[in-house]
Image (tube, rainbow over all chains, first blue to last red; front, top):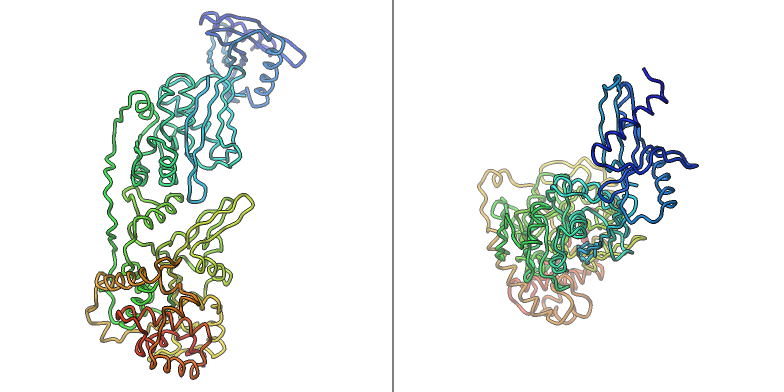
Length: 120
Length: 509
């Protein structure tokens, strides 16, 4: 068992590795502003993608993706808007992705990638 | 990236064209629908997304804005699903925009991309033609009603994919044969020949059908009032094409048409239950929908157990009976629906039903009978020209096999009388004797000397009102027309007088 901080960190490492393997460019990790944090900002096919990574150690309370509820979605939208306002020069489309990771032990995990997970 | 698709919507019994504009913009992914959509239209977003995905296309990750113009009219229903989906695909360049200008597109999408039927296809097709469109693309179940409109291509499509095929390559996979042949020869399931006895009532109904008079039938339970009423549409003249289209429009906007019947050729017979509300009777709702009076347009509205109806439901009938149309005002809009009906009512003579019956004793008190009859208001009765008694049948007649004229024979006579009336009222706003008013009564109802004498003595003896006098004259006119006489003779007047049972206060003496 990992504690929450370690688990989150571990999950984000796995997600980053996964995205790179799938030819995404990582624009920024752990983008922080006064509203909160975006786990990963990636780029692929003229899309700037805001990625939320959720890692869990057991599925007794539902899948990791299900943790991204309406409140979290609203939070991510707010963050995305702020990010876009700070980096206005992009002429590209945006997208929200969710990566859920079920962690069972070192090098034993299950990853699922939900593209365009929600609309604003 | 922008695309425009022309769709259509219905308000009242008329349709109007709606421009569906789709804009795909950069930004956070969103799908917004503007232009006063109601709940069903807003839900189009989910159906459109699933339908596009399940038709093996990409749903764009863009900021999508769909606008339904004119933006100030409330949009209802699911008919915008298909135009929105086509618009989104056209904005991505999947559908050729060039072909979209000429067609009106309507249809509800299922999640699989197949099409479901919509309401109001007939008025939409008529409007599309008036606005100079080449064709209308719609679900196959609505194809037949739209095909009634000549001079416009009707393109039935089963799915979103077929629609795209048609717009891009002009090919239709499952072309439904809509070789529409005008068939206004009605096929009724019932016939007057099946009615045993009741010769007097049949004669009265023939007069009613011939002159467009409203009828009330009074008789004990089980004497055949309902059976007779059901057969009235079979002796009315066949619908003209315009009448049939108007009637079909009303049924079309409520989605009541069956898919195999293009145009309604049978005159409607509506028999609403006596618990029907005001709105159910004349129409109503936030955006008013037609009620029973409009559904029985050009046909028979049968009110069984008349005194059981809510008093105010009967009162609201007065205006449509007079005007042949009904105007319903609500805060959102005011709509007028046609309501040219023949009112046929049936009632028992008293609460137990056997007042005046030859064999069975009535168990009601005098007061009960009076109260029962008073439930029907005078002003409504004033609009009913013919009052007839429908007595219980003799056991001998009951056991015999029916021997009467068929509906077709009666109808041929009715048609003749209608023709006489058409000539008579040429240039007037009315069509039949029942609608005559003061001046026309004077002009067309000439009595013979003997007739005048009889009518005068009847008024004195039976204490008839001025209104009853007018009714008798109109009835006399129709009866004389049936005999093809230009003057109203004494026999005609005598017969007319006996159709005024309730004026004679037969039951309350």
